Length: 383
Ligand SMILES: *Cc1c(COP(=O)(O)O)cnc(C)c1O
Image (cartoon, rainbow, N blue to C red):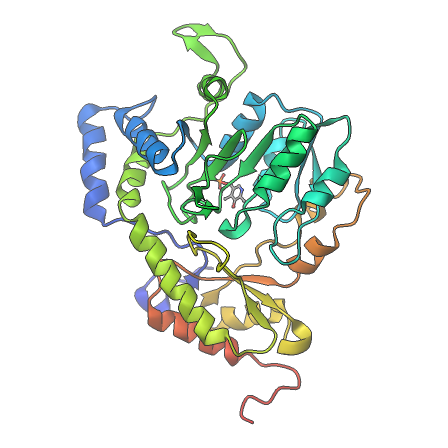
């Protein structure tokens, strides 16, 4: 059973929400009550869509009820069918959003350095049944956008992106959000910018945007006129209120993440066998994911034992992503004609450490100390 919450037994965990001051949310939420307008394209959803569009430099941003539904809507509006190529090394929702509508996910391996999908592996998997490629910007590091676009163009395939980790990031100076046919965000509570539950599709394609809007509202083209098989994928006004409040504080959230990331870097730099994720190739990043690669043979302790050690000290680190999607029961019956060695390797070695505004510098230093004091085979900490 979970102990009652108190500041003294707080568990530092991955994914605690970044929040604006309560009063800023409350002021916006009060307006929803006064207008008695809680959903169906209210003024706050429209305002947040406009602010996000401006920030991302994208013509259309369609807010959705969550990132998974946004991915489903994107796949549906793009007319995907048959097979779609995506990485296995991602959150399972990327695959679910396809399989849920009868599209077969075909898993490509990732690059062991960038953790992102390997374009050569993608190209090798293209068949006449392939209808699209879905790239994932894992941990906010842009995937190989131009290489994937070149392959997609050459085969006449649409390229979509799961950008759930990459809000606030950029690739070659261009904000994530404007690439491919569309980029799909999640604004779940655990992401750098959140609306509680929520997500968005960003696109510069007007016809595609119209189709998404139609499908996210049951297929209603006009009152009492349904022209397509849609679903309910709308964001509500209270989530948009939280989003508008939180968006004002995004620079602070990212700055906090960056400072913590640097403290982790200092605290762990000289530990043999631990390799922190490298964001130095990016000028603009959200620094939200503090990912450490644990090399058992040099650190003297494997990833899972390190995780257990941290848990006994009140730190909930997460094994993002273990195992790869292809090993999860809904997918491990799918014939895999190709091996995914890098996915297997990474899914046993990566550990996500807490970050965000829940922490202060002392918390980060304490977590580093706990990592360094993890009992290790053959290593005398007092030598
Ligand atoms: C969070 C996440 C999703 C799903 O978003 P929800 O808003 O939780 O539905 C999809 N893909 C990735 C990579 C994610 O991290």
